[in-house]
Image (cartoon, rainbow, N blue to C red):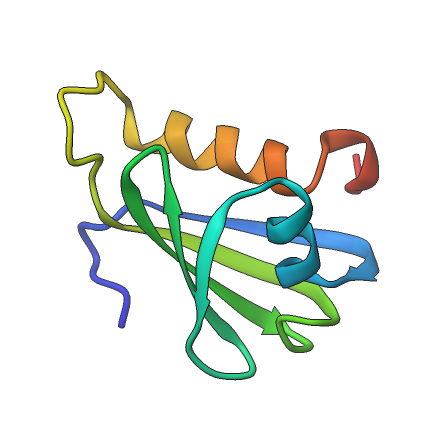
Length: 97
């Protein structure tokens, strides 16, 4: 469940993407929760990736929520962390302009 205070970013794609295959390809740790939701460990932060159109294996839109901040003393801005994650998962040239 997304809280009003938690940083969330939305991403829309022109073509369906297999988010879990993209996570594997990027060597990012994750755990499948259900057809739409995946828990991700990224730079020691815990993120929730949820397909909002399609499923995790064929999403045309998804959200990324910062669930737990990085565990170490990593200096970060929540929105910047989410943007960097999305850029690593789905490169900007593969998204609509």
